[in-house]
Image (cartoon, rainbow over all chains, first blue to last red; front, side, top):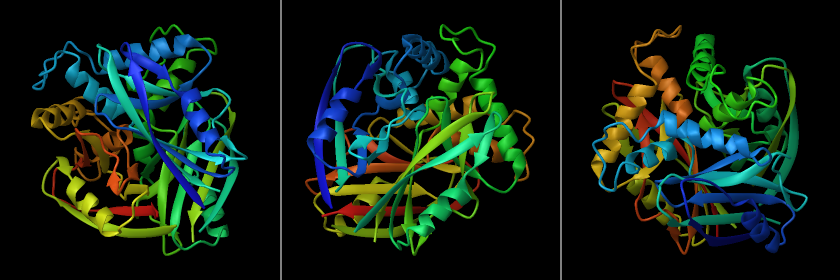
Length: 138
Length: 138
Length: 138
């Protein structure tokens, strides 16, 4: 049984979903395991992770619009130190997740045909984000 | 340390929660480990996983009604290729999760007394769904 | 490769977020591993886990107020056996999560600077809660 860890850096340019599937699959492949478990951990409270459809781009537009609607900027929050997109970013992070684990089977991540891995940037301005990756297996 | 993986197939007949606890506990038991970690990964973007109360059936009725209300079919989405239940299915998947990991202690999944494992089918028509399972331990 | 498991008991006194970071980090440190994966599993359907900002306390006030608003007590639910805070507790658990896994790198949990681990008590009265912990690594 072997393990590997790394920190991936993602520079975001805008609010919304960033496809990180290739970057994560490439690092996983480089570890040359055939069976195991990959864990992705987002080290932030205003960005999160989401597995979603990688085909129709409208799904991502609708997802972004939906989260903007159920955790809106327009409400008055007690916490607004960093502007109106600050507290909604924490809420959208809470509603999605900061961690995902995906089995590795036959040297491939067991993602479904339509599944992509996305980092969800909830702040308006560009941010440097880091993901901690952990892989265990044989 | 040992590992095992499998793909479980779940045929859903309707929108809503499907109890998969027994099927998952049985496969786990068959691997004959006493301490470890089980990971369940749902390979879809319009079905998800949820741990919820396994006693009162009204909890599940209320849960289904709640998700139908906060991510409703009636709204206009950009993405509706597969009908009005298409985009809400993606949203309800995003609000719940596609992955769960449960510790195995003394040869039993560490579920609480009232916890059951459910697959949440978000589409109206029957679907063949697959879950990837990974177990590691001794 | 080694494993360790334990059950942590958390006595809650009120509805809201309880910081469990220190208790979890201490147990993890006591296992004396340098690289691995920690999994936390909340064994309840009316309490959940959340990673959120550990600095400004207003973030937690706003989070609690937000979940009280999107899964309110005032609605009529079919399930209300244990009072008006019963069903909303299940909904808020479903919207957040009952499991978190965090990589261990260089003998430290790979939490970001502003991330704390919280147990989210959704019931009004005090409860004795248990978390199952699993750690694997070297």
